[in-house]
Length: 140
Image 1 (tube, rainbow, N blue to C red):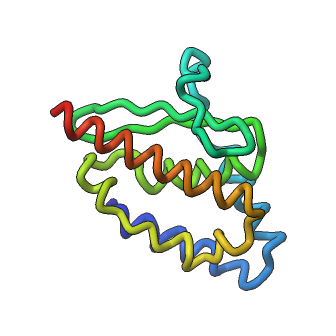
Image 2: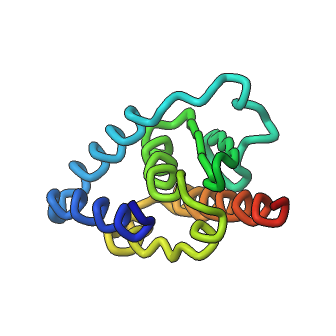
Image 3: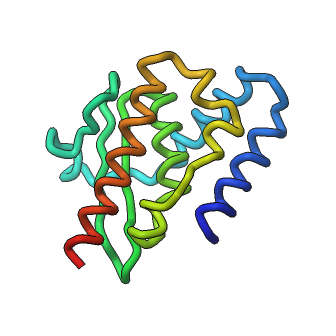
């Protein structure tokens, strides 16, 4: 599945809730709960995303030319947000990740319904994931 197809899938999921942001937050929480657990060895300070108010750990590794992300957070909504980002970007090439427009964020209204600190955290997550993709593309 392409990044764009995954984005469309998420847009469709969130559209089921109409304008009910309480239900959309519940869905985000469920996404966070379904996020595969990150190995405790990766929950280190050097893997904390800077710019997030909550603690968010991100681990990336290149496997068969695709970047795989694992993440966790100590805050339930933030864990759902990083879960969305992992779902969209994990399993793609560094070039695909760097070129991703991530328009689903605006289309589902996520940024405008987050507190300023969570919105900044989302921007920091995206920045770190794209930086990891850039780093792996330079290595190879």
